[in-house]
Image 1 (cartoon, rainbow, N blue to C red):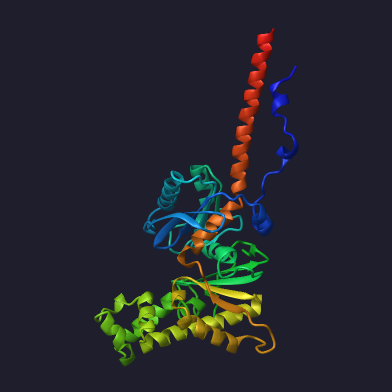
Image 2 (image 1 turned 180 degrees about the horizontal axis):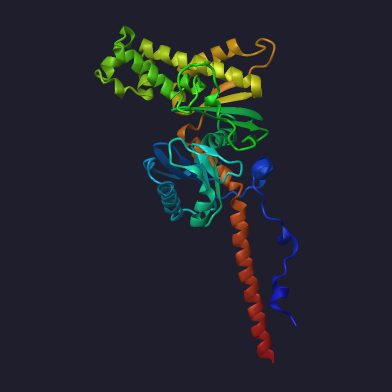
Length: 382
């Protein structure tokens, strides 16, 4: 006599093992990842942006909100993320969620070890959110997710050895080799902004002196402009007039705008930032030897005003210059959505777990229905 066990015995491919953590299988898994919509989250110091992204990197819908104040508990930020995902889920069939966080993420991509702009310290973000959202959740550093997006859909397509540098308030970075994000033993590789380039130089919020981001970042650009304006330097008259004497109103985008309009001091400041950028890139080329550097982040909006001087300084400081191939230096193509798109695409690699679990639930239900129908028909014949 047939039993329910006969109907539920696994056969064939149903014995396939569960998907392991992506990590070393990213590139191979990419080819078999389901072409389903996933949500990407980009968490910064000022905003949380969420979007539904398809398998070709197209953003189907995007929503954003301000980041809750950093003095608030981590749960407040987690609530904000959950609300955005649930809002998008009302209109889209979401299969996984990827989160790009501005901070250090452990090698298992579960805990945010430290986030400078948020109150996260060793926070198990993945586990907490996956329990609330009922879909697989992936957490990674925002520079890693941006680099993945540029490699998949943007300026880094076709490159096997890519380094991304994100210039914003500070400097972030990521390394991709053979289609895999290199996160290091503890998950915190790519923190290029804290390489020391000037011993005993400017104090950095990290506690050290002379970090690269103190000479080539949005903070460095604004600091230099404000110092010249506060000193009433003759070269700063243009920007002083622009802010009507309110030095604290000087911002990075304003400096870039004035440089495009021909302000000599703003052009020179961007050149200085670009030259320091080139020095750091030359150091990274000596250590990593990539084929391409992709420059992203808000400061990269200055384009050739910044990247032109960076290329010149890179060639002057490159070890073995003239006797080795030079890496390509290019601006990122995906803009501020890169981190969100990359997080969604990486999440697609773990979406199979959700699809498999859902399929198994359906199969179990169907087998039970067949068994119940068999039992009913058997009783009717007795």
